[in-house]
Length: 169
Image 1: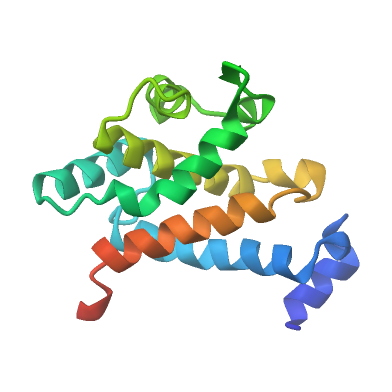
Image 2: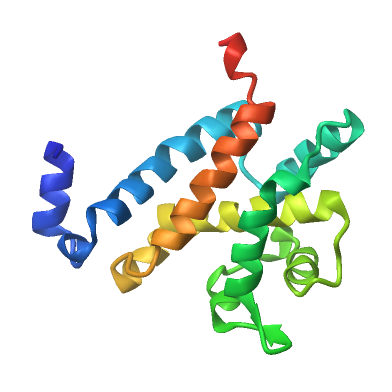
């Protein structure tokens, strides 16, 4: 265990109650998001940049939304039930520039345009980033986040594998 992890367990409220898998998923997310923002968003993380990246993949015929079906299913299950969005959807804290109508339409299944599916998935991951890095997730001591961050990490690694140009260095 790293010195920082030991410190967090001793000092940060609730951190010692998280499983090792939860701690690792959150730490992994921080590193993956940083790489994603550098390689995909040119260091400018926002919904507009996400949509522009998705549009460029679509135009290059490299947009493969089928590969993200498990992650989309996870988000739809988490954020839509019984014909309406769930309370967890409000917890994303989507702001006006985050294209809430697009995300909502993808989550409720009324929009299945491949570009919008991919954009919505990445905007949700972006909101995880904002809610973690701006401290909102500490309000409930990071509890219940394993599925969110595991899914987000899967999204980020898939995108980076396909579009991150990692082989070029």
